Structure formats: structure tokens, C-alpha cells
Image (cartoon, rainbow over all chains, first blue to last red; front, side):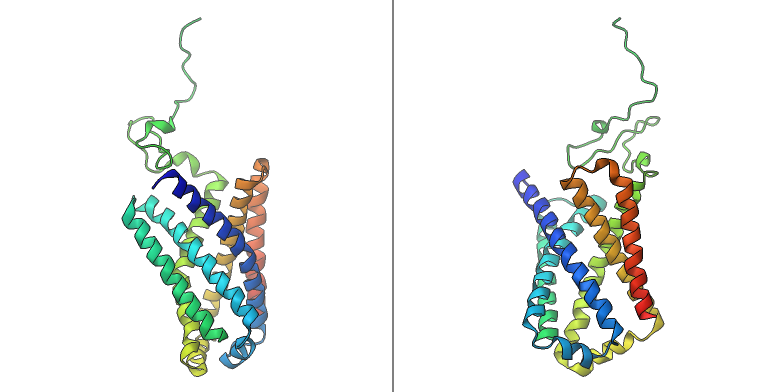
Length: 112
Length: 150
């Protein structure tokens, strides 16, 4: 992997980290608030169904995660298993796409 | 005065290991001359523990995420299917796991913020304070959640 790609990956990781730091704090506060009122599907879905603003928030959240998690995993795998090269990049890209699809499916499930 | 002065401690030159940046800074062992895959010199430094907590928490979160997305996706089938999963959350073991998860999330976040500060700000001398803040914030988040849940 050339230097330019490595810098891009480093940059993407830092930017997604900044986005996630903000979003995770919002998510934590929301969760603590949600758990306070009890965890039943009716209560949760009653709050979330049809809420376009929060749907958008969580869609962005999923996108940032789908960038951040695979890059982090890539570093761990490459350092632990000494795995380098194209095969690792392809597996990480696949993992990122899977995370994005699963995540957006979950957002649809809860907010649509 | 051209004689070479022997250093007091043996120099463990990082470059003596194989490869080039960024793939290794592993030094050569001072006695055996073998390549050290794990650098023992770093272990006692608090920043090492910050790195380890950040890495392990990140790994745990990556493993947890697909499960989280699957559970939420249950709502696609029906509210009852979602409820079926949510009933699980009544069990104390699950609540305990949830508290652990919040702690892990807070630890990874504060460790990550520490890294961002190290990379983009010039607060090098404040690393130890940052570590303390990171640990404290994680604890606060975990406790707040625990107090709500229990």
C-alpha cells in the first residue's frame, strides 16, 4: 500500500473518530434516558418509529462506524497475525460493507 | 580525544530490527542478540496500559456491534420479536454485561480522545493527567448507567 493510501486511511480513522466521539456521547445520554423508562419494544418503537431526524443521526452513526471499526481491526490483525497486503484490505473492505448494511438495516428496523 | 566512550547502558537500537517504518521498531535483545517481538521496556509505562485498554476495548466493541445490529433488526420482523429479545435484558447477567459494555465504550472513547489530543494538540507533558481524566470519565459513565439500571 502506497504512502498516499496510508495517509488517507489514517485521516479517515481520525475524522471518523471525531464524529464518533460526538455521536457516542449523544447515544450514551439517549440510552441512559431510554433505560430509565423501561425497555419494552412498544415504548422504544413508539418513540422512534417515524422519527426522520434520529433516523438520519443513526444512519450517519452507522456510516462512521463502518469506516472506523474495520481500519482499527486492520491494524490489530496486521500487528498480531503479521497479515499484510491485498487480502487483508479486501477482507477489511468486506467487513466495512457488511457493517454498513447490517447497521442501516437496523436503523430501518427501528425508525421506519 | 578520539577514543570511543562506552555508553553506561547498552543501546537497544530500534533500527536493528528487521524491516522499515512502520512495520517494526522491535529492538535487538541486549544479551541474546535476538529480535524482540515484544519490547519489555514499554510495559511499566502507564501509556502502555492506555494503549492496551484502547486496543482491547476496540476489539470487544467490534465483536459486539454485529450482535447489536442483529438485535435491533429483530424489530423488522415484529414488535413482538423485538420484545422477545428485550425480555432477555431483564436478566441480571445481561444487565451486568450492559454495564460492562458502557464501561468499555466510555473507555474506548476517552482513550481515543486522548489519542486525538496527542496527535493534534501539543499537550505532551499532560499525558498522565489525560490518562487520569480518561479513567475517571469512563468510571463516571459506567456508574451513571449502573445507577440507572440497578
